[in-house]
Image (cartoon, rainbow, N blue to C red; front, side, top):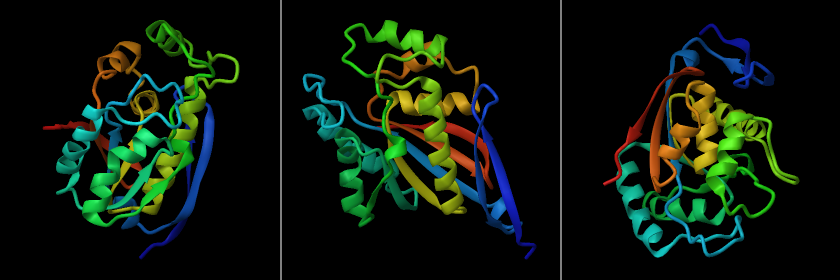
Length: 218
């Protein structure tokens, strides 16, 4: 079966080495198609300033059913989620319908800003223009991208040939898109700011991204 020890070197968008994904993969493993459905959480209640515990709004709660409808025929076998309440609550209905466990992965959490920002658009533009810019106690987009990409490749490695869902956040997901498409920038991020919930299908051929496309939420 040509089983071999493989090391996949992962680099960030600036060419910096992030990690090695290490494992024993057969030739068949490396030719498997793996489907990852990234789900950006539904609308949250912005009157709650606690980023970790911010709940879904009434509209967001209703829209979780639309997420279930969008994913129910995708043969998903595992669910991973950011630990943030709005992310977990977005996928709860689907998890209950399918009987799947929600596996919390802290590396899929949203970017830590460090403090409440009133002018979010200006702040986010500054971060997209300089991937290393951050506030005190906050994270840069480069740091967010590194941990999210590391977590993504671990999920793909563990689920070769399967379909999985990962519940995430707008900025975190945008840094993942940017990793695979360096042209994705602040204007593209801003185009999806109001898209909640939002589902993207990533198709991997082995450990290589084949394509990504938006899944319609009805």
